[in-house]
Image (cartoon, rainbow, N blue to C red):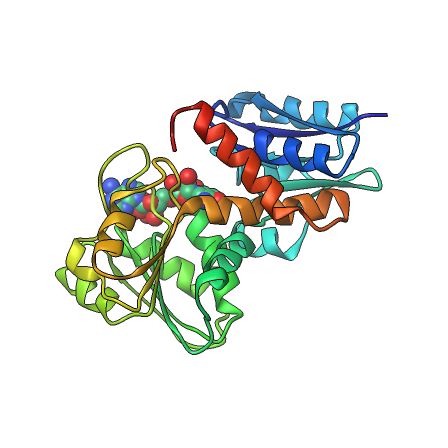
Length: 278
Ligand SMILES: NC(=O)c1ccc[n+]([C@@H]2O[C@H](COP(=O)([O-])OP(=O)(O)OC[C@H]3O[C@@H](n4cnc5c(N)ncnc54)[C@H](OP(=O)(O)O)[C@@H]3O)[C@@H](O)[C@H]2O)c1
């Protein structure tokens, strides 16, 4: 019988995940379908009951439900327990288990372009995505700097980490932030700045050749941050690489099979093309 995977959030119309996963399910001949459902916060509890009742294989969870869903699940994997956010739900022997694949997605995207060991990494932001990225980075041999508009949020995030090396924090809005970013090897933008707008969280003189810059924001595809970093000679990674890898990690959790990365990417590119976003 056909198994179902849902994405729930509000909004979800923009999500590229159905295109990525349905392409991968079809390619591997899996009898699975991926559907999107808009679920406003006030309907979350009933929606999770519905997921249980329908006997889903799994789900993705997006804004604004990533934290709220936790109290409705049976268990959390360490990736979710540590970050306090869920982007993937897996049905396991009658239980709904929360996972977070955003951190793994970011690390895989970075490691396609650079090595992380011994590097000085700056994460911009201290929200849910920044937390997932910082938790994944904390287990690596990196020095970490978290810069955020509200410095106290960066301090709270840093205090919750157990980093292999040191972790520093600061204000993203200080002029000093530019100097600190310029001194780094790797930059990850995990703020919402640039999403659906032509703005960058950093001025263009923050970048240098030899730097690697990942923008978690993937709409638009070529954000101002990436264009300016590329102009300064940095290696740039669009948010779609992270999206592909976090999707691949969720796919493995649901199916137990390695994800066909090129097929997932093909599904994503076709969806972007249909929307005129390439
Ligand atoms: N590529 C992928 O696979 C992927 C996966 C997950 C998320 N994302 C993207 O990651 C981004 C962050 O999402 P999220 O869920 O982490 O958001 P979030 O939890 O709401 O956090 C937002 C962060 O952005 C900062 N911020 C907001 N407006 C700002 C401004 N005007 N200037 C400077 N900083 C500002 C906030 O700072 P304060 O603490 O000061 O409020 C906070 O650190 C989104 O664009 C999302 O689409 C991408």
